[in-house]
Length: 144
Image 1 (cartoon, rainbow, N blue to C red):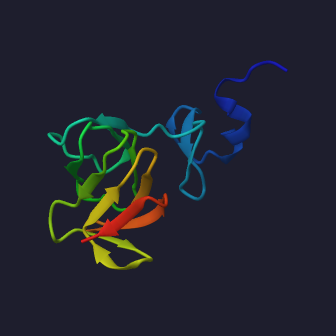
Image 2 (image 1 turned 90 degrees about the horizontal axis):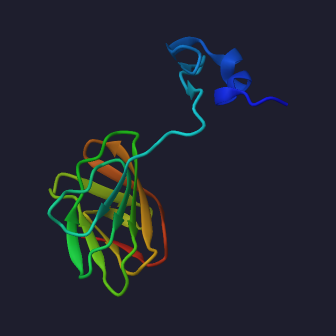
Image 3 (image 1 turned 180 degrees about the horizontal axis):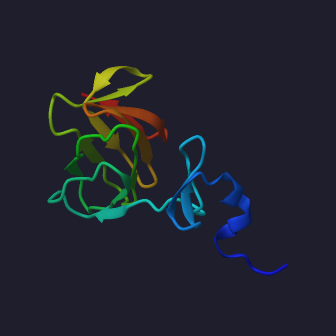
């Protein structure tokens, strides 16, 4: 079977609104069709000098325990925070009391703590003032 660029036969029949020829388009449901996967931003922070962007994956690897400020959420956009450094704990704060982190653990909070290497938390922006916790490892705590 010959190689078919961009998997065209798998989605070509679903294209309704073309964005970039027949390689990228919207289907009847308004869903993006064409790419193999969506490319997400990846940042690695070893210091707290830069705020954490509100999208993609951020790998925290400072040598010492640190506190980072997370940008305000974008509605419907997922954010993954991961810790790769050993022996330290990293706090992620919302930067303002008006932005909350909500979870099934109870009331709205303002801080996520990644306690050891390999810990991660998945957040979703549910409004411009609220992050929802949609997944985490056992070593993550959500606090005030």
